[in-house]
Image 1 (spheres, rainbow, N blue to C red):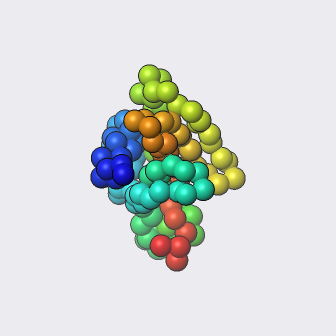
Image 2: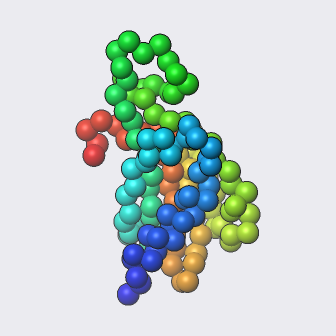
Image 3: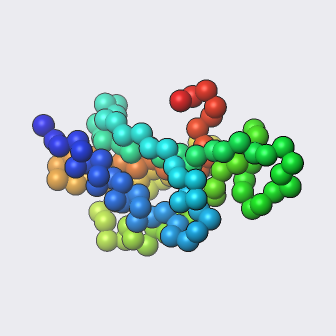
Length: 124
């Protein structure tokens, strides 16, 4: 049985290596993480969403993106850190607004699913 805490820590480590390192990205409000085993994909998954914050009614904009009254950070990603990794797939879905990165490590399939927009209100 694999040590799921080590798998989750490894996925979080890879995630931190690709998030934008400058102030004003996800580090400002954080992100929501969900770790699980996807039986259909037979992979351990770390799914990530930026955190939405309620937009002030008198807001004229401050560089944040807005969706349904929520503000969220637009992160920049630097995938250079992944060049040395044996990625099995790297996919961006414009329709679903997410990056999917998958690789095999220590006999386990690992996958990051990085969403660009926050989780819809009520989906939590």
